[in-house]
Length: 394
Image (tube, rainbow, N blue to C red):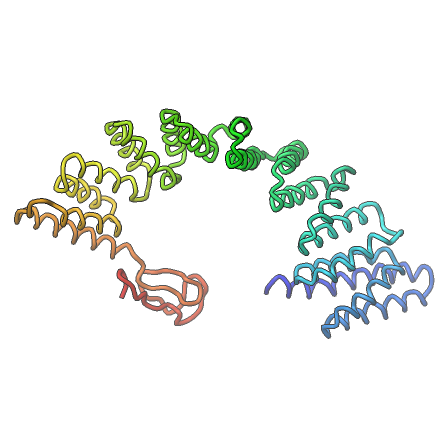
């Protein structure tokens, strides 16, 4: 059952709950009022079930004038419309609630929050910002309002305000916001770099490190900034530091890092760093980079020997292609022994690649398998597991 279907089932329950509350009050004040509530509720539900939402809204808004205890029904209805993307109807309901003098303070505050969420959904960020800012000033529902404001300022790229409100949220909830704020500071640093205001960029980089000491993004900005200013030693240290802290960033730093090694003639340092990354990074990039260095220094044959040995431990289609290219680029033809070793190695690499690849996939949910199943283990559909027709499959 999807979320909207569930909401359609729950809405009548909320309505009946409000009707029952009204009924109990009516029993105390007279049966005529109970009859009006009963008729109104069921008339509104009937409009909903017959997909006449505007008529249902009119009925429920009239009920709000009758009994303040029916407000939960209106919240449920407003949420339903917002989730369905019918934001104008949700706005109308929540605006009407706010105008009612019979609401409690908590109910009015919740209605303001809901209306702000309606405005956000409609893209009316300026109106939403006003409502959420009022809630923050009043100290009511402040954490929720702060989260919405942070989201708004991110969309508007107002990083200063995003930082200000993230700090407030951390103080209000104790939730660590350092990493998020560090990214906001990096956004400001990059903005100032593009504007040529390098002193301000440096200040925001220091702020970013203050919020997240090992910020990978701040390290990358620092390295690129140092490189643009001709400070290659600092750029080199920064690139190496971020790669060691987060090897998954290696594809972003590999090219400029290798260029610095080359310009500075630091081949030994390059070999040591690449060896470290080969051991720590699951991808093939540092392995291929090291094989190219070996080729430049010792020739294609030695580079091919190195790459073959490594690929037998960590097979890769991209690495296999690079190995074949290395063998074809050798100045002198391979001896029969060398050719036999290469072919045997390529066969082993290919076998491991094929044996580790999925050969079947569910055409309903994408579940991958290496053997056939009549019923998909994931989505439980029948006869949906089919062979994969690609280089590693059927």
